[in-house]
Image (cartoon, rainbow, N blue to C red; front, top):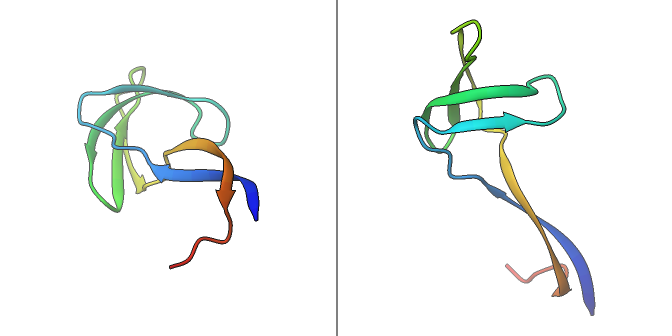
Length: 72
């Protein structure tokens, strides 16, 4: 049966990239210092402080007419 499905994919952050997070406890402007498959390190451009967190940035899209659940 065709459904509308919201898809989350890890966003491929790159060192030096300037990002803005809208909402949540990490909202604001950041510069990406480092990123791998499990962690991301961001620097606050105001204070210069750096934080390393589990990856949390995702690109979201909606697929119309998708099969759900998808076969493994």
